[in-house]
Amino acid sequence: MVDSPCFYGTLQAIEAQGLKALEIPTDPHTGISLEALELALDQWQVKACLLTPTFNNPLGYSMPDERKRELLVLLKRYDIPLIEDDIYGDLSYETPRPRTIKSFDSEGRVILCSSFSKSLAPGLRVGWVAPGRYQQDVMHMKYVSSMSTSTLPQLLSPNLSPPEGMTGTCEKCAATTDEAGILCWSGLSATSRREHG
Image (cartoon, rainbow, N blue to C red):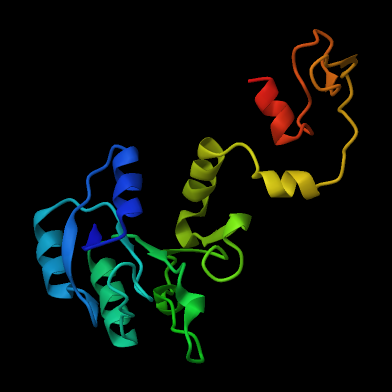
């Protein structure tokens, strides 16, 4: 379940996972229609709710705290997890910054996601998740979807000694390889790994 309209990348990510999005009408001042959401939850098998309730893209709204609490109560009643995208939360001109829905969550129902990409440095590609009760599921998804690290942390990491059993030298990049000469060790730079396909 997503708000409508929502960020097009959200719809692309849902489609890429082979899932379907159920769009719920959204008010440009108060956010997702809780009444329409409740009707949808009565009729459809919704597996999760994905929202950007603070400085939403594209509408720009920030859901009032009372509506955030009501949303959480509704999702609890239907036992639906909420994926809260708080990517824009730090862009507030007012202090304190707007509260996340996660801050009202006492059951671990909300999976809070955020990043520095909108407030500090887009190129860092550093993000985080507070998964609540879904920690094992989130860790598994992270593992199977990205078994490598982004380029910047690789460049900043110290050179490590090759593991035991690595005896040869790669002809392409001079990195240590296994005894068969076909496996470069994991300390290779991203450029070197691309050379090896």
